[in-house]
Length: 183
Ligand code: CUA
Image (tube, rainbow, N blue to C red; front, side, top):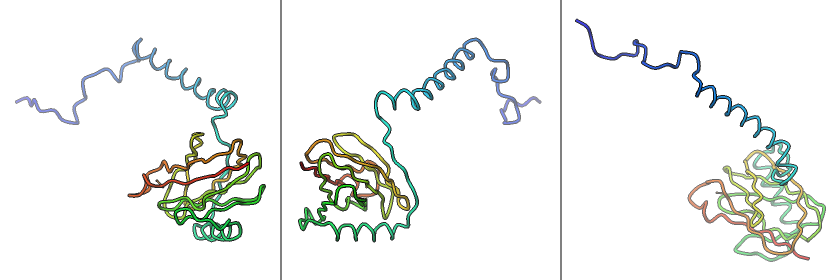
């Protein structure tokens, strides 16, 4: 008696093992062309016209080491003010500036001067966080065990918000930081 049950041993109906049809060749060709276009755009066109890709480098550091350096940096440069329990720090232009993401705050609050260049050293001491500088929309990931380093030259005075845009726990939506830029 013939069985009507299907089994994985029976070849499925279809045509996937036959040569590509006209429509498949067309879609496949379009996908290949579009990936090449995107490849060229992302490495050559967008960086040239939009300055979209932040220039940064990363290297390893022990989480505890970074936390200790951040604390030493805060103690050496603190202006005495505290906003919401978070120290405000005014570092020397041209110096290394430590900024630590930790559940659920950015430490410290930075006070920078327009037109001066700072080297920002960014890391976390617990879990992965996001660094989103508003309203500029400058985004980086903050990963424990790695320093993300970039140069920052503030162009306009004002208060800039830092938003954590990587889910990091129950207080994620409250995780805000601040950079104050003065003349
Ligand atoms: Cu830190 Cu989300």
